[in-house]
Amino acid sequence: MPDVPPANSPPRKRARSMSRWLALGAVLLVAGAVRARQLEQVGYTFDESFCVKMASFSVAEIWSRSGQDTHPPLYFLMLKAWAAVCGESPQALRALSVLFGLAAVAGVYALVCEAYGRLPARPPRGGASPQSPPPEPGATAAALLAAAFVALSPLQIFWSQQVRMYSAGTALVAWSSLLLLRALHRQPARGRDWAAYATAAILMIYTHHFALFTLAAQALYAAGWLVRRGDGTLLLRLFPLAVTLIAVWLAWQPWLLDFLDQRQRVTEFFWSKPIDWSLAGGQIYQIFAARHWPGGEGAAGLAIAQAAWVGLLLLVAGRRPADGFIALAAFLPIAAAALASSLGRNIFISRYLMFAHLFLMMAAATLIVRIPWRLLRWLVAAGALLGLSATAWLHVELRDKMALLPGLRAAVARFDALQRPGELLLVCNPMLYTSVWAWTRDRTACFAEGAHNGYPYFQGTAVMKEEEYLEADTLTASDRHWVWTLDADRWFGHPWTTLLPPQWKCIAETRYREHYADLVLRLYERPASANPAAREQ
Image 1 (cartoon, helix red, strand yellow):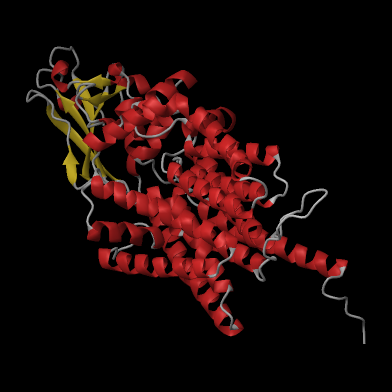
Image 2 (cartoon, rainbow, N blue to C red):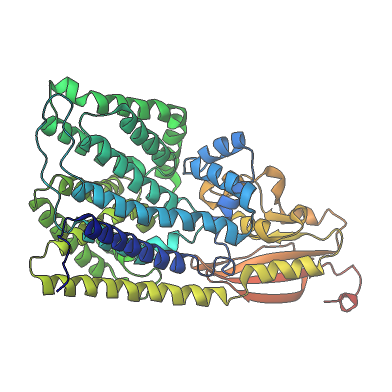
């Protein structure tokens, strides 16, 4: 009978290490496959084209124009640099979000491994430090399961396919949390570990403002850890954290006034409806169910929220050090968003809760791995993976259907092909104009209908130049005989129409189905001009 190497022998360790890397590779492969689907074919949403247009400005303008909207500038700067290297096609620009989505999956795996599988802390030279709990059995399984949950999450998949900052923020949340735990676990503390965490935290809060809630959870956990686990006086124990937070605060100062202006702007003018139980439940439902999946009732979301709350309580009852961090990072942003929304403008929106969702996935994976009965543990894990796979597949099917719609690209292509010298395209509002701007060959011939001060900030005014607006009444005083318009029906629940003076007559109309609206391209002529029948269509 052949000899079997002991469990702790180098060959067995190498085999286990190889199997872990292969499993993680498989998870990343699946994550990449579902995220990289239909990147080129699906039309830009307004939010995406807003980012594309913002990235076209200079670095100084990006900083100032970001302050006129609601987001910090880092993602726009990263997108500008990425476009300079990889190009400006939808596939190239969305690939940046795909990479950040994969980085979030890998970061979750590394974070759970650090949280549960790399203890105890190292003792300092010349003495012994208090011993941390031993590595938790199944830490690698929990890390792989958490990574798989994030890889298959429809919420994470959707925003990894958008030219938006959410997948970048999610990746930075995961990796900053990992760097924080490494700084805490290493004894004695090393300055470069804290510096690495400070750098990641600064990047995180300059990517999305909701990361400030995650930063608060990180700071609270780190303070509690250092008070309970460190050596020496209390001030000495808290010193590295204090220096780190001061560095983060100082780095935030150049943006602080813009942030306060944005906060006031949101409070006074943001479009969101007042929060109630039904709305809050619906947003919670969207976190876990496929986006745009029919049946997002508030009651189902509230039931999910109660189950998540019970799960976090069970996690904390495990009394492992990292349990508190995962529970706090999951709970605090959601609770803070709910409290802020009840006291002022509603900001309880599913995409803003993506960072907390990351930790909810980790909590679920950890609890599943802790189920003491092996068969039940495997059944629950398999059921969770199958359920997420089903919702992920629904998202893939929806994405494929969206790619089949001709939409904005076809409408703009028709204008580009039929446009005669001197003819212009008047777009019904700045939100649609930014998408037209991203697609058309002749950006000098396209304008947003109206005046530059006639729209609220959340309709994209931060990326608009004054000369890109054109009031329809001014066409009467011009010598133009024809003008094109692009309108949208069934967009945000109502039609958006460019209103030309009555002397302009519509002589052609073409409709294009987009995944967010029905677009209508029209050609108008003045009656005094040449016979409409003479114009070639």
